[in-house]
Image 1: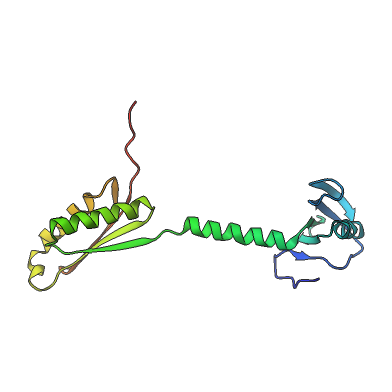
Image 2: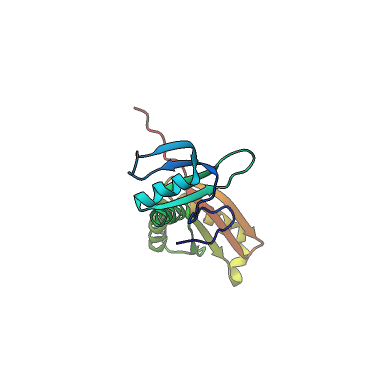
Length: 185
């Protein structure tokens, strides 16, 4: 079997060249994780064939260094690599949730939204409170700014990261979970 080589990507070696290489034998043919500083390419290929796995080139020879090869199951290695990437993407993915409130929101509705926000913050997400003023509400823009900041501070252990005040019609406040207070023993 042979793979097309992409730039900088490892590939399976199918034909031996007449050269010396560095090799790590990760199979159980000779010794587990045996490192060979300098070995002929034909011997490296024979080790891989005897193990029933692939001889994979990880770096070409250059600058006076020997080429670096491993005896591994390439399909299994590739599968584990994709699993690691997916896990890293899942861990690093941070979601921003938006909660819309109005300046005259009821107490019960506000309690429900605060409970939702605390749940989002516990999951590690950021939350943006947004308030859009309509019609005659624009006349009371200063009170609305104060109200949205009060609403943001009602959440548990939050840190106000940013404020965006667009004229007299739209306000938003970004909050994230701050570090919990240190308990003194």
